[in-house]
Every structure is written in structure tokens, then in C-alpha cells.
Image (tube, one colour):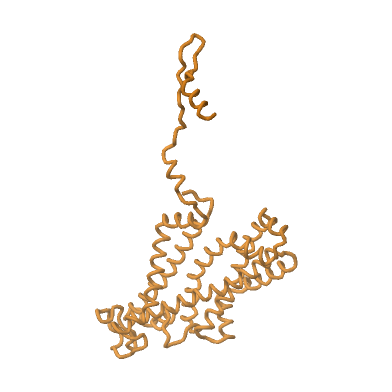
Length: 327
């Protein structure tokens, strides 16, 4: 049967569509126009919030300059033990003559007891960065916990936490830090503990406002309706969507913590000699600003550039993480 039908199909004439007058109709094949660049758009990987933020951050030249300087300072301080004592001098060595001017052997000169200023600036950066990062880390942990509890639960707990924060705000920041160090005692560890304790109220308020704007959204209501616990809702659903302002504030706060540490060391309440710190170097050199200006120039320059780098970086992150910004 199949062979017969095949033979019939071969012998049957193929008919073409005709119009009213009997003329053969011409069939036109229509093709859908392809927009230029459509193939590239189809192959382009999906962009995320953090990917878009990195693209916007790279376009901010000042933020990139700040990031490069921060990376350079961190790299120099981390590797200081590998090259500074071998090529220059130990930060506590007093073998050189006192108050030598900058030279090839001592690029930043020496201080009043013969210590190499370049070595002390490098090792002082290690102290300042460590205090800044650790202090902000303590503030972030306390501030995120307090802000999350205050913003999510509200009620009397919100009132209690915010009134406690108001008590911290009521005291002048530097005087409060001096009072804490008078209680804890001066020293490297107590400095970042005091700064970290004083920094949590600001972070708690910023995070609380972010949670208040997020916790009433549909996906949080859906998670709550599905029986998710409060801790899961806070840490899995709310915190990732409210953390962007905290990243910006934390980056800028590192610069503020470095200034606070330098001020406390300048007053004699911070890092104690012989451990080098930028504020302590300025305190020791205040009586020699005219005969030996390099003693105050280089620590002051280090404080200025490092704090400015963190501020520029934080400002760039603020613009990069703003979803309303256009590419």
C-alpha cells in the first residue's frame, strides 16, 4: 500500500495557487528583522547587584585611587618584617645619630633618640590599620545585633535600645573614649575596645532604619507565612538586602577610628612607647616642629592620606551600591 501511494504522489500534478484571473500567485517569504547587537545581548551574562556595583565603582576615579592607596598601605605593612629591618633599621633601634635629616640611609630622617622615622611610620601604619579595622569590627557586631533587634521587633525593645544609644550620643565622643581608657587603662588592646564600644550606636541606627524599610516587603511576609523563624528572616532575608548602607558607613568609620587612635596616642592614652604609632610620633615631635619638621611631616601625611583614602572609598561605595544610579 505504501508503494502505491508513493507512485500516486509522483504521478499527481503539483498544483500552484492561482488568482481570480488565473495567474500564478507568487508567495513571499517574510523574515523577522534581527536587531543589531541582539546576539550579544542574548549571550551577555546575567548582571547582579554586586556586579553592577563593581562596574560603577570602577568608573569612580577617586574611589579607585583610594582603593589603590589602601591596598598599597596594607601590602607594605603586612610585608614590613621582610624588608624594613634589613634595608633600613628596626623601629626601636637607637644606633643612629639623633635628628638626622632625610638621606638615602634614613629616607625620613631620625628622631631625637636616633630611631629611624621611616621604619616607625611603616610599623605605625600596622598599628593604626589594626586598631581601625578591629574597632570597626566590634562596632559592626554590636551595632548589627542591636539594630536588628530594634528594627525587627520594635516596641519596648526598640525604645530601650534607642534610648541607650541616645545616652552614648549625649557624651562628647573623645571625652567618653578618654573616660573608658581611664577605666580600662592605656594600651593597644584597650584602644580598639574603647573605640569599638563607642561606635555601635551609629551603626545600630543606620541598620535599624534599613530594616524598617525592608521588613514590610512582600518576600519577608512570604517567608513569615511559610513559617520561617525570626532569626532566619533577619539573617537570610532582611540583612542581605539592608547591608549596603552598613558597608559604606563601616568603610568610612575605619578612617574615623584611625583619627581617634592617633588623637588618643597623642594625648598619651593610646598605644604606649616603644610601640610606634602615628599619634604617638606626633606627640613626641611637637616640641621639635621648627628644628626638625620631618618628624611631624611624615606621620601627619600618613594620617591624612590613609583617612582620605577610606573616605573616598566609602563615598565611591555609596554611589556604587545605590540602585538608583545609572550606568
